Amino acid sequence: MTASDAGDTTYTDGKAYAYTTKLPLGVHSYYFHTTDTTRDAVSSVLQTGPAVSGTLLADDFEDGNADGWTPTSGTWTVLSGKYAGQAGSGNSFSMAGDAAWTDYTLQAAVSVTNNSGGNKDAGLLFRYADSNNYCVLYLKNNDRTGRKLELVKSIGGVKTTLGYANPSVAADTFYAYKIVASGANISVYQNGVLQFAVTDSSLASGRIGARVYANTKAFFDNVSVTR
Image (cartoon, rainbow, N blue to C red; front, top):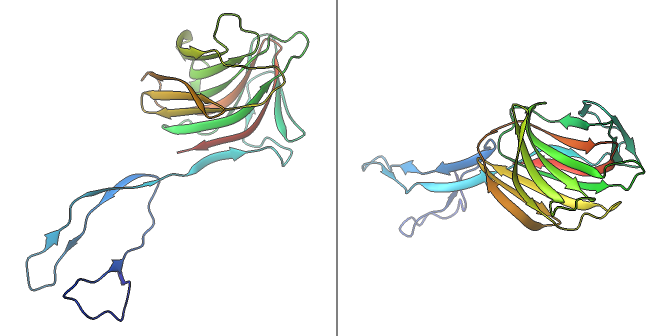
């Protein structure tokens, strides 16, 4: 520790010290255990904090490439600083990140286009373990059932809806989406507004990804993963 004021030699009113260290990502706690060598050591009360966060992934595609992204099918390319996905007849994913990622916040701007012949159905994947086990937020601008935003989990290939909402998802319009996955708690936001929150512990970790479906074309931008 370093004295905040080296010239302060009046100890009857206490003395301030500063301690600096580097901490890994996560929530930390601390206490002080000290003695003046003439009396028994004393300990301070355990304090919670600080919480150290960090950026796991950030891609705005302004460099003209999609390094670190791995398409599973469909056509994926960078166009004018946006990541464009064109689906085949079914689901087409492009994956990024680390399978060991657990709790994180995924953010991305997504525009589902009104391309001719497309199903107008895109989405964002998270906690992706493999092609049969993942969570996906569907983004559908042609939905007529009140589920333009629908959160679905796939476990062993069996899909179950966890939650849904029906905000505007206009064609050819970028919206900012945020998915916060913390333990079993999952919250979904559009343009900073909470749409719904659910609890499900089926999947604890996995990669993130972009999704287009049934000939849909969509654009993805400003993708970030933080914790």
